[in-house]
Image (tube, rainbow, N blue to C red; front, side):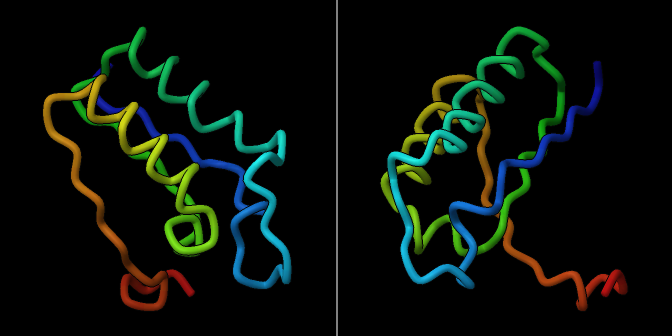
Length: 88
């Protein structure tokens, strides 16, 4: 597999929420997704989530980054706005 794309569950991380629960069960999707990518071993893996993941759920964000770093040789965080690529 050349490219694999996955999206994390954005609801527990979105900035629209007033409270962010680091123990929200939906966060389990991140480590499980990285585990699947570790088995598949694509040449390129894109993991997408809302920008609020890093600021609203820093512990979970770091957990996923650490897992990505253990799984892939190169990990790069790219933040962009859909408006900037003509999607929104």
